[in-house]
Image (cartoon, rainbow, N blue to C red; front, side):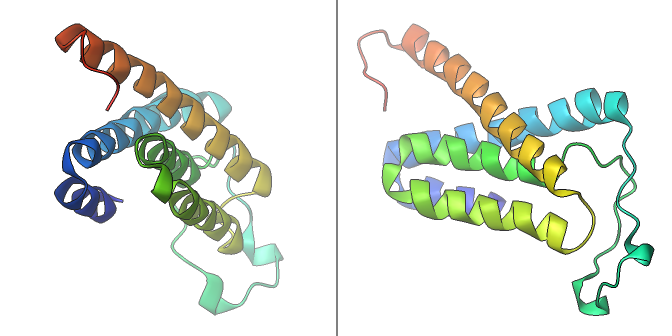
Length: 148
């Protein structure tokens, strides 16, 4: 996501820089919300991949953190929300990429499908909150400027 944010910031002008900044900020707030707030409360164990017949090619190292919700899905959808609201032409491709990230967590056996769905919702919701805060800051800085 950092590479995508950098490309958008460099090539997207003022709107791209704002989208990239908000996207990275949304990832940070979402990651903190999920990993420091929700996961310690939920304390859900990850799927037991040993009991499922999963090919070795699909396996990735199992994270040490609790399983619920998916932090990867949350961060991906937070970033996609921020980018999509500023750059509508990228909204569909970036959300498809976020969906791919979320799906990959189930495909590799480190999350249950519901954890990915809730993570996606938490990420988008947190990004909406970050967006509202960013809009408020921009209005305070320049009340005459429309949303970029």
